[in-house]
Amino acid sequence: MSLVAWSDTALSRRLGLRVPIVQAPMAGGPSTPRLAAAVTEAGGLGSVAGAPLAPGALRDAIREVRSLTDGPFAVNLFAPLPPPTWDRTDEWAEVTGAVVPDAPRLARFEDQLEVVVEQRVPVFSWTFGLPPLDGVDAFTIGTATTVEEALALEAGGAQAVVAQGYEAGGHRATFLGEVSQSLVGTLALVPQVVDAVSVPVLASGGIMDGRGIVAARALGAQGVQLGTAFLNTDEAGTSPQHRAALVQHTTVTRVLTGRAARAVRTSMVDRLEASGVEPPDYPLPRAYQAEPPMLAGQGGPMARSCPAGRLVGILAAEADAAVAGLV
Image (cartoon, rainbow, N blue to C red; front, side, top):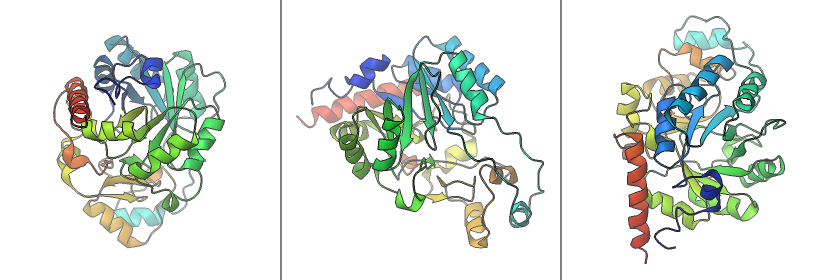
């Protein structure tokens, strides 16, 4: 691998990236239009976390990114999920001590996708399955936690696949089989997915510096997707409490949102898990918390505090140095 080979991939050329570094979409606050634009301006691919946004708010976020950069960016949505029921909410409220809130108004995937199509976004990515892609004229990226899911995404029209390792922060993207059977580490998952599919693969999970990027490239990935690495950047909307907690232990749990997600293990997580009460359907558990869940990956202690564009430059320089150290 030469000094330039790690950044010169078919995927980076297809998307017009100087470096094949994708900022992961992090819903609930950390992802902001400013963060997405800063990563794109630095030569990577910024992402808008559109899953929780109503159509109007999603349109505004896309327009804000475009006001800050002329480069490519992605919009991420969650594939359609069954509507939640309010079963177990009273019992859950007793555990959390919260008052049962009114039913939240959840954005419809169909309405969000309409905005994605209308705004002609360059890249459309998604999590939790395989959404209908009719009318989508963007480059498409789906997320997989197993080889079987990667194959299903390719068959369903995904033009690239994110291989999400066990180390990754945020929601597990699992949509085939049980989450417990899909907790595969990045080092083991990426080469298996690369060997199984013909589309480009992005490695995700535990990658925090240039060494990790080069390792992912050596495994056959054409790029990397980093989330936790950007949580401490200036443009991220990460709360001060969340930033401070990145050095703490993380765990995969359902008690924070109703779906398996890697987050900082707090006393609240301990108490909810110890209760033995089954959490309500996604995303209802979030309504019982005073603060959004502090989702983060296992690389949290390595997160650096600096502008996002500077971080992209640091990562690229570290990758160059890592390659130089191998030759």
